[in-house]
Length: 288
DNA sequence: GGTACGTGAACCTCGAGGGC
DNA sequence: GCCCTCGAGGTTCACGTACC
Image (cartoon, rainbow, N blue to C red; front, side, top):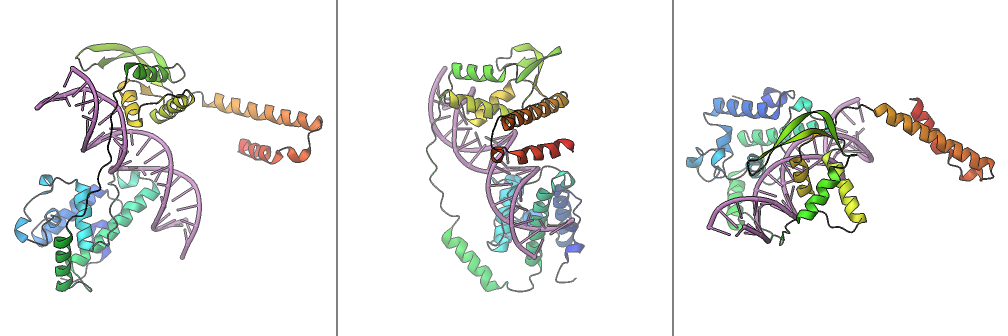
């Protein structure tokens, strides 16, 4: 068997596969070759004792990503840039930049793993011993003292204001037909008419926070507002029905502005102060 | 002491902008 | 045109406080 592995020989080179498929293939292929699983290779005691490799991921308190980052950091001797996130979508469904990020991480990971399996240069017993010594003397690091967090119970009035705001007719439209059942924590089921929200949660929250700012009211934190909106059952408007009307109104507004500027010019406004360039841009945009 | 729930932080994804 | 980095948007999670 060759001492070095090539990228194209490895299942990771098939970029059309999802990361989960990669993990499955990598795990199975490693197990076939070595008689053990990749999972067991990533256990915290991998360098200190071979008797502990039988433990599995589920028993570890760390998340899968943390364990992975930990393993890669150890294997790369601190050279590995930690994986920031795990893809939950299939690779082909991700945006290009996101896909490139995961591919980059996969390549880097693969190189490190290959280097560990078939070290061609640089890795010596002395360096491994030095790494062990460093880990035993320096430990896992210092925890930063967490800041004091204070909690304030929201008053019913505050919650009422928020619900009233998000239930305004411009944000919530009741559908003329159908209904749904809200199940309360007390077990009581309430029948409410179906409603459609015209704005996504984050926009609603931004609008409410601006409103609070104008009225010098302290709003609940974002997460609480998200929870409240989620609890108030409503569908999200996804249809583009009415979009033509908005565009039509917008174009009409631009025409009106042009007429106003033109009139101001005839009344003696200096030509240099008339922003013709901006209207030219709008004209070009509207023709496309 | 148990639990409900408010909070900050983390997660996942995307887009802009720049280098080659 | 491809690749990469960085930062922000939108959402969810887990911790820890306050109340019963």
